[in-house]
Image (cartoon, rainbow, N blue to C red; front, side, top):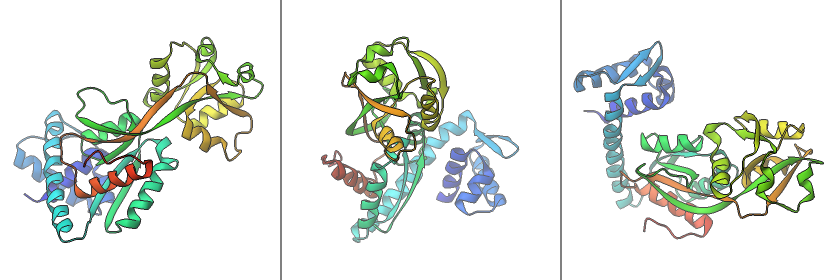
Length: 301
C-alpha cells in the first residue's frame, strides 16, 4: 500500500474538501478521488460522507485516520533517522499556533531553526487553542504552540515555556483608569466584550483564578473587533499580554489604555505534541530550538 494514499486521506480529512486537498498536494482532482476510492475499496467501508465538494469523516473514517496518521508518522521517522545517521537532518514539520504566539515568538524560533536546518520544510497554520489540540490529535500538525489548558485524557504532552500576563483593555476616561493596578473584582457588573467560545481561553483563565461576573455586552471573534468596541466606549475587555502590546504599540488604537491587574493573572504558553507517537528527529531539534529561545532545558532529552 502506497504511503501516498494515506497522505491524501489525511489531507482530505484536514481540509474537508477534495478540491482543496488536490490544490495543496499538487494533484489532479481525479487522482485525489482515485486514492480515496482505492482506500475505501481496500478497507471495505466508506471513509467520508460526501456533499458536493465537501467531505466529512464517517465514524469508521475517524478511527482509520488515527491509524493512517501513525503509519505516515512511522515512515517519516524511518526517513528522518536515515538522514540523521548520514549527518543530514531533513524532513518536514507542520506547525499550528494560536495568534498570540505568532506575534513574535514562533517566527523567531522558526527563523533560528531554519537558519540551522535549511533542509527541513516548515508549514505554519494559525488556529484557536481548541483547534490546535484537535489538529494534534488527528495528526494534521506535528507541533502546536498553545496554552496549558490541556484536557485530561487528551493524549497530548505539554511543555511549558513561559507565562503570558492577562491585561485589561479600557477606553480613555474610563472609571477604572484611576487605578494603577486594577483589582479584578471591579469587573463585576462592568460592561464587557467577550471573545467567542473558541477564543475564550484567556477569559476562562481569569474566571478560574478569581470570581468575577462582568456584564457581557458583546461577543466577538477577533482582537481587532474587541479594540474597536473598546475605543468607542462600549465596554472593556481582556487580552493576552503579547497581543495587547502588538495591537497598541503601533499607535493604531489611541483611544484605548492597557492596564495591569492587581492580581497575578496569567496563562502558561508552551509546546504541545501527541503522546501517542515518538517525536521525529526534526521535532526534537525544533523543540530544542524553542526551549533554547526561552532558556528552558529540552524536555525530550
